[in-house]
Length: 186
Picture 1: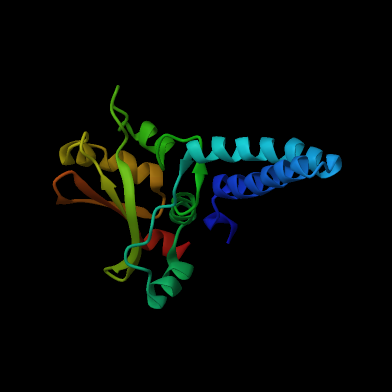
Picture 2: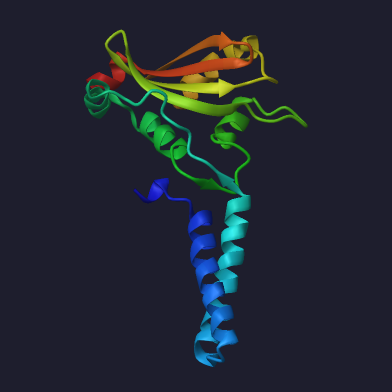
């Protein structure tokens, strides 16, 4: 549940309320509440602003995952698939993009250009296996570069995961992380 709460918004709300209380207390000459409002409210408000400025929003599930796929996830999903899903579906702070370290390791960082951006994810069944499908907006990285990195991705996201790359539109790439039989037999 806490993964879905923006710490920046929480800091702005609590800090704003405490700061307003401090100003009101100052106006009515209540020194004790005034000090509490200023000494706690303003730092929390500034912290909330700093977090909000460096916030990456969670990537949405489009469409929501059906119950049948959720039960298959519990049976077949690898630790890597679960980690990727959990990392990109929560608020993150101080990163350039979701999966930025993975994309850098895989060689998708272009000097002076943005990372491919994860814009949505979905869970589905492909040939009876659980699959986590990441949808990327990838204007700077063409499909052939994604395909050249496919074996490296299999090693990075594996063991027990196969990688399928498809282009779904101009500048749109889908990366499917599909559970393989070896991970199901272990």
